[in-house]
Amino acid sequence: MSWGLYGYDNSFVSPLLSLPHFVARYQGSGTAFTAFNLNLLISVPLIGAALGSYASVPIQLRIGRKWSLVVAYSLFSIPGSILQLFAPNMAAFVIGRTWNNAGISILNTVSGLYLAELVPVHIRARAVGASVACANAVSVIATTAVWATEKIDSPQQYKIPLWIQVAFPVALALLTLTVLESPTWYMVHNQEEKARAVLMKLRHENSRIVESEMALLRTFVAQDEEHRQSAHFWKILDKENLQRTLIAGACLSTCQVGGQILILAYSTVLLVQSGVSNPFQITVIIFLAQFLGICIGPFLMDRYGRRPIGLAGFTILFLLDVAIGGLACGGLLTDRERVGLAALFIIFAFFNSLTFQSLVLLLPAELPAARYREATAAWSMFWSYVTATVTTFAVPQITQNAGLGAKTDLIFAGCMFLTIIGAYFYLPETRGRTLAEIDEMFRMKLPMRKWKAYTCTAVTERAVEEFTAGKPEG
Image (cartoon, rainbow, N blue to C red; front, top):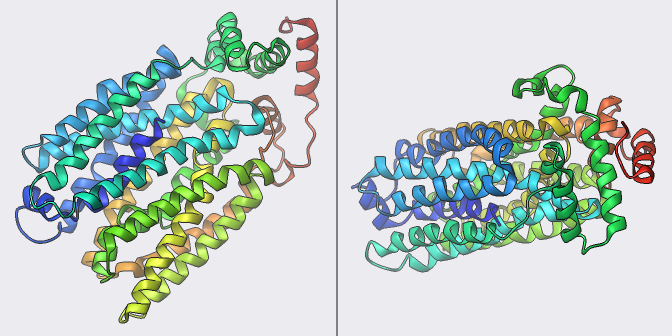
């Protein structure tokens, strides 16, 4: 549920910036925000998000996954949302968005690890994907809320969506108080009995399943035991860990330059600029398509694997980027062309969600070594926000000041082409693999293309020995 807050903030801001009363309140003149003000409202808050990703590391190490979420809601998202609601000017509103985004970043960094550590291996993609599905479901609520208030001729036109933004983190913070801590976090911090107690509750008191999982957790943690005392954040960039770190965060950054910033974050603004009829309603449909994609994608990932779905989806997104940019190059002079542009936006949202959004949380949750799980997730999220900051700053300059509009998608098509090449060589197949098995294959430096056919032996043998003995090797 924590990603729902990201879904709301990421989705309601585009239609919100097109509301006349909001423009009048915070810009004072004109019918649309200038490129400079768009950068203030969308790009600058991402600096807070980037800093929040690093803040999540010491918080998680100190108090665990559950209480990190509570801290993010209560000390960041709730105060930041309240400041936006009552902001007297543009500066206060931007500070509120920056403050809120720092909390959202902490939530996003923690939630993927948290879910991957709670659920059985065979449903890991679906469980982690459920976070993004929740975000997309809330995205539909957000865009629908703004669409519904568009016709109100008063400041309530933008105040109502902001009130909803305050209510979300309050409700989610209360719900988080009822959940359990991660058993993996307990094991890494030498609290085995607490880890076992959590697993007993999660696995309905099935002691055989619990002891089997405990044996695998001991193996996963024991593989890093000799290094843990000397572990520090920047070792994720050592030669031994560099490839692992970069691959874990690659999708979070490449998705930002694949076209989603243009088509999702600036969808309403771009549709208005292109002369498309009913831009608010089309924005709602775009986010409905995005929600449908994330409902299907994780099931396909668990059924057919990460590599085939990822490579096929990336290729489709590349072709859609080319089609959108090419159609825009024709001038969008007829209603048919403008309807075609809107349709391509909707299709892009579906496939972007089915592939990128199904992978972005999954890889940082699956790939890191035990001692670097928090650091790798934070690194991945940090560069995601850095990339998003650059692209959200650049898009208004290119679409408005340079006058390219939707033709900008041809630039993103080039980025997608490079993404396809990189994914072929470096996207690992982790379907059905335990964290310990993934660790073994990285240690062996096995080429990513060969992961699917490889049978792990060392981890399996050690886990069997520990399960039989009922305790770690000593």
